[in-house]
Amino acid sequence: MKVLIIGAGEVGRLLARRLSEIGHSVTVVDKSEERIVRLSDEADVMGVVRDATDPLLYSEIDLSSFDVVVAATDRDEVNLFVAAVARLHRVHRVFVRVRNPETSRLLSMLGVENIIAERQIAANILFSYIQGHYSIVELLPALQGDFLVVSGVVRATSPVRGKSMSEVDSMMPRGARILLVYHDGEFRDPRDVPYLEEGMMPIIIARRDVLREVARLL
Image (tube, rainbow, N blue to C red; front, top):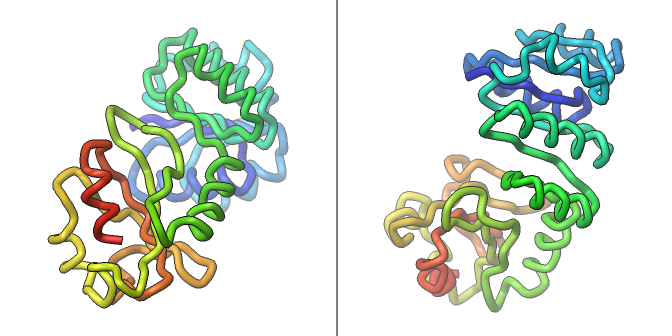
């Protein structure tokens, strides 16, 4: 897969490294030569030192040839511009990092569905800790189709408490899967969690029609 990442900050850099490690062709654009040099030393990526708001950039790199575009700078206005240009070039998969809810609204008007609203996710994780003992909480909107990413906190009386991850997987309804487990201030791969303890927060992707079944397990 051919991926273009705009922004070589922490988010863009980590994403570029992980994608290149599994064999994807990754191009990263950033106006900071220092960032591009650092990333090029760390991963097998093509680095381009340019301002992402320069329209000429996108014809030079043949934007329409990319399968995925990720706008990952720390400036909403730049990410909005990148998303608009990607849509004009008919790139089908566009992912945008945003901070301002108004930017999310504008992106939705452009038809961009894959919007990663950082402040919303952070606030919802906190809300989930406060309220999640009593219900599951939506973390972010559907990424594709009729799925949501939700969370909930394992209670003392939760049916999944004390169960191994393989047992929990078998208890989950069809159309629901644990993506991560948040505990002690860090996200953990479910494969690294021997069993679910009280207070752990599973991060789950689930179809809307099975959310009640998921809630009964937490």
